[in-house]
Image (cartoon, rainbow over all chains, first blue to last red; front, top):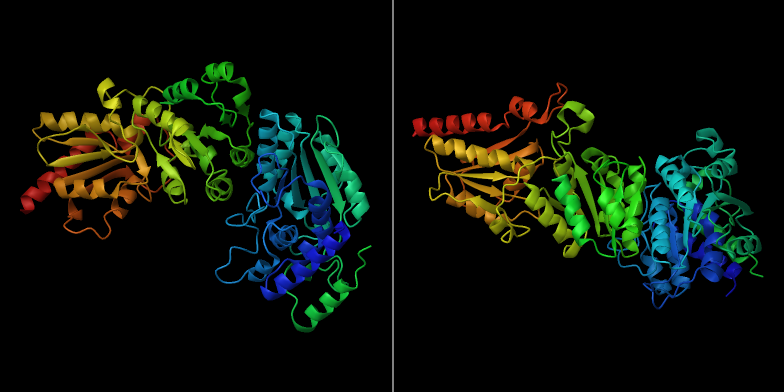
Length: 271
Length: 316
């Protein structure tokens, strides 16, 4: 399977899961579908049959509300059967709307409250350095999440400790919970902030598979510095009526909307 | 207690032990750093990152101690403790110094008077409050070598007395209140947690001079609470008093009361909790001064116990 095909499947699963579970955040999943696909298809050293393999790369979804996307990619990569995805947000299921690790192979960390994932990633990266292991730690964060002060504690710490095995990927779709980022707490000049904190910064098109693959294939991106990849993305990417709409941070596609969404996704090119 | 904690750490640290400080411990960390330079981290004044990072280290197989002054290591990173450490059931010990009013003169920000209540409410979390230097050493050693999962370790500051004898050290069992003084009379049991132990022993001695016999139990383990032992003590003794340098809301006395729910044959009117009121202590003073103001000095405790006893006697 190509990363492009995987991204399409993640999107289809996410739409079905959020529809079936009547849950929010489909737009947030669609904006990271390509990032997840490239990571799990081409970058992460993981073994689905041995999820606790000691030398695996660590992946943390800090924007836990997009958990459906990670569940979908893990299922497609055969960490567990895709049929289980139907239980997402259903009574009695382990597959909570915000990502949970308990009983779910392949999920490293439960999140859901923003501003936690990067610090945990720092700990994992630091442990790898202490133990002289070469696994890498990838943390996907949201742009709105960068409002959380805890992240900036982690950003300070990880450059001081030269954690070049830590890679933060920021889903910069420029829309946060109820309004655009620029109208809430603006992040620009975003890259400059990281540079001044001692990080290596790459800016990519978060929906360009080749661009993502190219950037992520040479970790550490910069020796002795942690790296951040600012991925310019579109909230709701892949479904015309969801793109760049804050509404789809919350709304669950139902009825005609669901049909239209799935029809649009079916026509996405995979080559 | 703080020094005993560090001594245990220095003597028993394993290759997987990691100690993180939130930029505190001037003068007491030197030996550990010298002995285990690669296992020491100063997280800076950034407790949320400290605890999140501790969770990450523990996920990678480390056994982590995250250390700071009580409120900074509990209240500030509370969500990291709950979501990252406790939900994932990780080997992280949150170590607080200055539990209670140890930093009495520094003001409300440094009064750790709700920490036990908050920490024991978190699932998977064990809560230890050693009563003297010996218990602090022993419990720290056990955490390093035996205990797994999240722990809250509430220490005093420095200069606490050593109450245990060399002999009694061997008999300390985590999860069970230790009988330091066992009187043959079953009039009164003083159940003490944390740094109140010395006071409890003094209370017992002062009461003895007045002809009242009492036993003293050190409840270094607040969670899991030994329900069976607590129920047994309530049945065995006429009066049971709890001593804690903590708010009466949700702390040790609450944990004791919770363990009585559903028990039969227990007389709650003879339960006398000594704790702090649920209020901010804005008038400062040293630890002994504040303890006296809030009725936690040996003198005040003795007075209250005598009053309770004589009232009950008169009613009869």
